[in-house]
Amino acid sequence: MVERWILARLRHRRFFSLAELNAAIAELLTELNARVQEAARASAFETLDRPALRPLPVSRMPIARFKRARVNIDCHVELDGQDYSVPHRLVRSEVELRLSAATMEILSGNKRVAVHAYSPRRCAHSTIAEHVPASHRAHGK
Image (tube, rainbow, N blue to C red; front, top):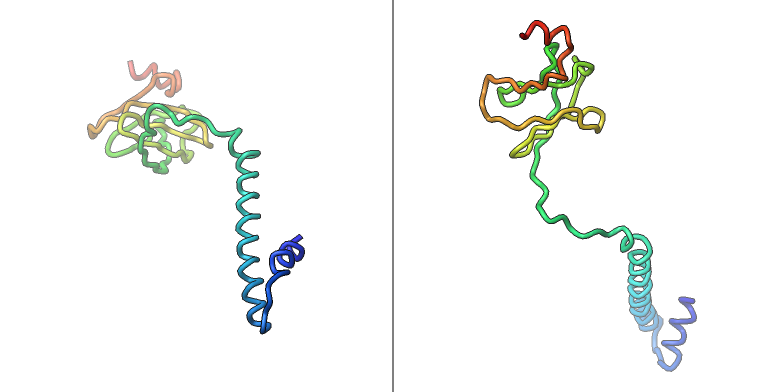
């Protein structure tokens, strides 16, 4: 296909050196490659990408920072001087914290296991009762 297309485009031209012919072939080859790649990109976009497109969300995605932490024996992780509770089954395991302006999420194995309202206060606790074992809850009363 390439050879036929290039020869058809050059059939009425005269060349007086091999270098002149090679330059004309290179120019046409560049043009052909651009056309083929553009068609392939457009075709791939129409068949693969366009069906998967969805409208943009109404609200902006919040900016978040991530941090790794280890769950303490008291079922809490510490972030910026504040302790946040984590389900008891994750004691001593490593989790990932996702902090945004309003919330602090705790992720374990790419699953969200806890969500707390973020508090900039230092030396405070945010504890969800279900995260602490029943025996510990009895001592807290």
